[in-house]
Structures are given as structure tokens and as C-alpha cells.
Amino acid sequence: MNKLWEAIDVINERGWARRTMRSPDGRVCLIGALRTAHGYNPSDCALRNEGAYGADRDIVVGIISSEYGTKEPTDFNDDIAKSKEDVIRVLEKAAIKKDELV
Image (cartoon, rainbow, N blue to C red):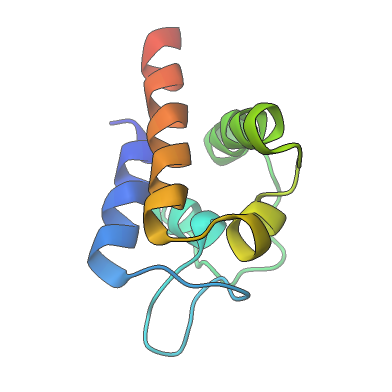
């Protein structure tokens, strides 16, 4: 299954967070949701942007770069996105793009 769709489910189930990968009450940011969907701890700072996770992250970066002018998902999540729906919209576009590549 496309893990980008799973990341959307993670945000919908746990809630959306800013300025943290995972809040004490379990909410997650965009990257925290993507890490969770890939089976990683959202707060794992040692996680490299490689493999399937890195490929999905690159798709997300491409979307936010072309639409919002930043290559940093954390900048988008923390400063540009106004709501959970903004983050989900980016993840949906990324998931659709990945589905089209397969």
C-alpha cells in the first residue's frame, strides 16, 4: 500500500501537530505522520532520508517546493500550513503522484 495514504490516516486518527514530530498527546506533524506510516518512531532524529521513506519524503518535498516555495517539510508544516487540511492536501497530492508513477 502507498504509505502516503497511510500518513493521511495517521493524521486523521491522531491529530495534527506543529513544532514537534509527536506531541505528548500523540498528535503528529507531516513528517511524523510519514515516519509513523513507514513504521518508524516519529521522533527518531537519527532516521535517514533513504529507501521507501526517503522516496516518499522526496515526493512531498517536490509538492511543497513547487506550490509553496520551500523545500523543508517542517517549514511548511510549522509556518505555512494553516490547518490539518492543508497538510492532508499536500499528502494527497503526493500520494496521487506516487500512484501515477507505479
